[in-house]
Length: 340
Image (cartoon, rainbow, N blue to C red; front, top):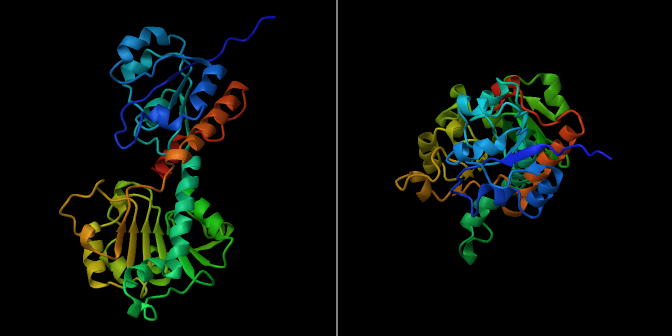
């Protein structure tokens, strides 16, 4: 009986210095890489920007690329040398740095941003619930027995107001998780209709209203030129007494100089910054010295044991592609223009 030839595939990757191992081993570990080797005709070496020319003769007929963080940006001339390429399965989040180049040539892009968003939303949910309890300020203040009775206690997780700024994949998943709690949800997003906001369990409001009304404000703005520096001193000054600002989105959307000034003035506020404009922050940044600004090293997205969930998504999508079924996580030019 004649068997159908396996789809020819290869891993494409490059450096991601913040990872403890190579991006492919990190994301496609725990048996995922070995599984792909049984599902397709997998090129034996990882293709990089440096070895592409040497590997290219062996990539004739390449139909599928598997990648993750560190995806090399191939030139138009290099893509011309891969005429059979049909799909890039990207086991990470944003594809804005390379996708349009491929989409213009009719090459599909599959992103695991939904799987990465699961990790970020879980992280956000934890911070939101701790924030409404007043945990972070309480922990700062409780440094001696005499403070026990006077430490700050937040309003709690019942009938309090939370605002999500920007409504992409992470915010939508966070909104869904928040439905398990009796919290009032405010949503800020230009393209979101009032009806869709209600479907998500929230109310559409302006950026100004969100900062003035919510006890916890979480930033999820997309990264576009018009959103950079969108969150400024006037927004932070409008925050309620004891309020919490969370940023797991992009550091560029926050005017960090303004944040430093306002949070130095208002020690009742708390900022939880998992992302900053520069990573790491420069040594002279005033944010390091502010006790009410809690910094973390971009922990929210899929890391360590969570990373293979990204590979699982693209493997499922590859199986759908192989079976001739529609891809559920493909990227379009339109979606690139809405979220970056």
